[in-house]
Image (tube, rainbow, N blue to C red; front, side, top):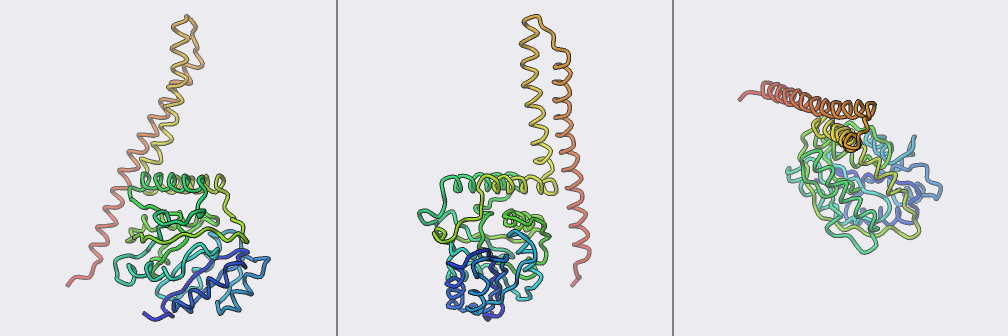
Length: 305
């Protein structure tokens, strides 16, 4: 591998306080193929990046996800490193991210921030939210990844081109992680350092709003990987609602009061909830057959020795 084989991809929006030093750090580590996708910054981020020797492309839309989708079209290098432009990641740790890819052990590598973060790098709300989202992801997809929201990642060009991405906001890391699982890519995590954001650069992440969108992305995409999980949650909500109303109906009945409309609603809620579990079971069965069919086709298409 030479330095031209690796593209350092940096999505940015108003990162003038950190982008220059970040590019210098990567060049110091021997990486000169640096692509900055600038979200029409108002503070001269793009000009600073160009002055430091990076190739700059202006984003045509809005959102980090849209920037990543746009930038992927311009990359031809065999290996790609994606890193945020806010100065929270260390350029020297790019070698650790690349190692599993270069050795052929992984198609996609995620930098795990949660094992070695500096004081102040996470607020308490962000830290709790990250852990809950990772637990939710693990349950939904049956894999154990510790930091699916990390913004420091390494890809092979082939694995990057396999990804079918649609999310335009901060859900992009989640969608990338899900796509890697759905595409059966080999994913590995390596511990990295995570630093506090520069005081000159305000965060663009809204913990509550973006956390909800990320959770919704994990849940919504689960129907193509784990339909029992997807339909099971819907079914559980309806059954719990039915049990709640049913408890009130029974309590009123013991007092000599008959709640006919509420009794009908209770029965409908529980029946609908049970139907969701049946849909989940059938969908899971169909998905299993589909996977077996795809695997059989792939085996038949393998070249024979």
